[in-house]
Image (cartoon, rainbow, N blue to C red; front, side, top):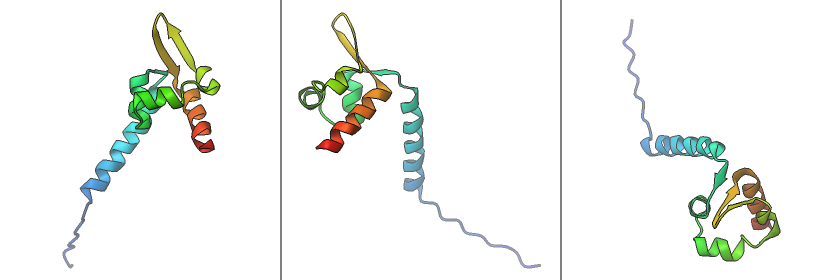
Length: 89
């Protein structure tokens, strides 16, 4: 019987990216409300740009929830509205 010699080469960078992507997808499913800071982080846009370009759109305003002076947005409808707006650009 011949001894088996198996070499396995793993791309650690690709594995890390895949794991981070899957974790990010799972975390996004957990969000219910997000604030402007988190929206900026997820969209890779500045808070000022989001405020000037997106938040005045009626599709975004529908998703807004206010309490006193704090604002949040419902995550799932917000993402759908942003996809519509961005596809129009």
